[in-house]
Amino acid sequence: MAVFRNRRPLTVSDAQRRVRRSPLLFTAPIVLLVLLTGVLGWEIVRANMTAEARAEWPWRLQLLDMEPLGSLLAVAAGAVLARAQYARTVRPYLGWRADWTTGNLRGGVSEWQVGLLNGGSHTVVVEEYACLVVPRGDTPDPAGPWTDVQGAAAALTAAGLTAGEDFQLVTMGNFPLVGTGSYETTMLGAFSPRFVDEVEALYLRVRVTDTVGDSHERILDALKGARSTAYQRTVS
Image (cartoon, rainbow, N blue to C red; front, side, top):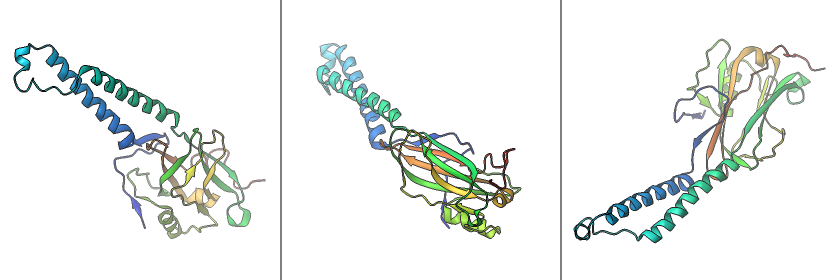
């Protein structure tokens, strides 16, 4: 059973967050801008020294002329700002919907169906998809153990629940989520009333990569709302 270890402590919150920036497309332009700013500072100090002082080491070291240095600084600053603006434009907006319906579990029983959507304008790719099963009566521990779909299904089966009858989980790997800007969802799972009664919580962690290489994550409480006043054991 594969287990995903957290890179840092998590909180069980369904708020979307960015967990990683692209080293090439974010870190490299920032490093270049800092280096050029340092060179600019060096040249400004040299320019304000006497000719005799500039003849001595290390002040006689000239890194770049001010004119090309200014042009490089403008290009680097523009690249950083353009990247930040574009990253905001292509940022995904992960959302989820759930409702009581029928059609996925055997016997036509009522099911709590959960679906994921990308409300952004660009396609993203699912890089990690993990589950956290909380048995009835237990306190959710956001530190885990997080597991893949097969591991979650094994834990649920060991608890006496039947795959295809009490629950159905969808495996996702390198799956593209198209930015539709609509409410069209991709199904993540379906859960019977018995499942809702016998499982305290089921958290689904979805981590995606956007077109600029940044990673975004959202943790969904798959059973949120299933036990509300609108809880229906049958769908007419």
